[in-house]
Image (cartoon, rainbow, N blue to C red; front, side, top):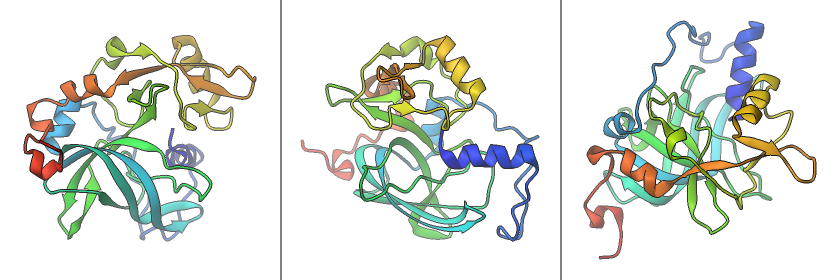
Length: 236
């Protein structure tokens, strides 16, 4: 789980106000975001890509990012409205479905995401996340392919992705969790479901299943994939 989302949940549970965070309190969680399908997400998005976080430029209040941009390198374009090598994703405020990203240090590579965004009406050079959310975690598989990490918990989804999940071995630094990065309830539930298992060295837990991105692509639907290879900068 993104650490900012964990902090956001903790903040709501503990009723901690975010002082002066854009002069607004976090939105109520009573209006829970309804589950959507991958096809619905892709149809609503202007851009759907596999992307890797490179850098962030956020304003923080009490360790929470409250405004600013993340910059992600495009690895695989699925749906694009122009050729893209680097994409700027802007977010502001704290809300359910927020679109903030961890900033990788100089010693680590950035996380990879299946990204769903729309062009920002206030700045045509950047993009913003969709209301249900903007990103699902993707991991590198041992054969250097990509797979959507299971469970896919970044956006509430209708799709029965568990039916497409396969046992996988990951070659990715983000394929591990610790007792600090998961709540005890989440850890116990995922262990019971077989989404994670204890690491062989006894330090933390490793993910065990994913959905191959070739299968995920088929679930994006006809409106989720750009056919024009020139826009996608793909070889003929």
